[in-house]
Image (tube, rainbow, N blue to C red):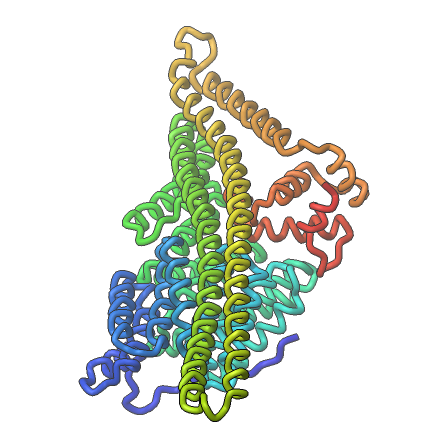
Length: 610
């Protein structure tokens, strides 16, 4: 159990809000360039929720100023800030490029806070792309840099992301540990944003534990209590709260808890919190949160049987996010899927098919985006490895050049000494000659070393190209499977009007229902064919069933097939149209059925069974 106490942060006399304070400092004419870069980066972080273009402008201005400074500190900080902004804008290629630049300039500074911030953003980028093991090691390295540097603000955020890595039942003990450290660092920072974020982290810890132990109702009550503490803090300290995304997420989580786990008489409480989330999300351009809020309100209307109202709510959500700042095709695909279900329950088959068509259009767009992002990640990882190898080689080359220069200087000195004392010290001349030969031998050895390094680099490059080709081949197979399904849907929609026979003795609705039933059967057959595509090794699944005492479902076996192919959680979620957290829960359930321990790697186990 995490024990903690709540603090109240009061306004100091004449204290300005955070943004005004930063802008006031920025307007000082005698402000040092390095300090100006740091303030611009903080402003970029503070403005990204409400004004993303302004954040890019401030980050690029910081980068421009930092180019005039000899040290790499400012440039590393500016590029690390751009990593966050590009991810928020869903431009992964630029995010990886900024990450590589930040790491390059981090090598040119000894400032530990800057080094920690760069490693923090490096690990956060891995976490965004579902590379949890790499993310954890980089976040811990960032925390090591922050220690003793009066950087509790960054420490708290890093602990928050470490806790999220072990959430959803992956490792409750570690999640609880890092949540507690997140809270302690937040107290040390004395910042409202960090304390609010820490409440969110601890509340999520209790909520995850409740989902693993539904009988422990006190865990759910603890999660609600902490969520409400966070919302109360955000209300009292609104003038000092910079980032509102956590508050919106907490309000939505609270509403969702009332919707899922409380009787209908608590509906007023749920609506109160979902309306709060809508208010915050509208002000801060958190459009994905906004769509989820409308989705929850629609679920309440569906529960009451008010299908027209449910449809109207979802359409209002789509209208509210029409001018989207960032792309979110998968979320919109789910909205249209919900609209299709509502229209079907209303008996309006034509409208249901229209919504279904839009669902497939957005799902195809989401699939294409994920395909591009996957290729971008592979290319970025390859380029990063290549850059690191080149940097290591250049570093060795520089060291060798430095030694060679030193040798030449020494040789020159010895040559002069030989000329001055040639007649008096023939023996000394002989020794100098021996040293010269040793120097030549060392240069020859160094040349051989460079040749070996180039050969090793060529072999590594060839290996990376083979791996990249294998990954691209697999992606092409997946694209083919998804494209076939979409083409079948489009062909069905185009031929639907021709399948309705006016002379048929059946009514229009009956004919439409028959056609829809045929479509569902086609979907079922396609899924069976798609599953057969993965079931290329029946002995593999027999061994799995034996290991699990025949407890694995067909869906479990499909998850195992996807994991055997090397798909990440994010890729599986995009393919099945579910949340990544559902994939993580499925992995956890499969590990239990297979009798694996919490430290056992499921992917390694499946590879050994194949």
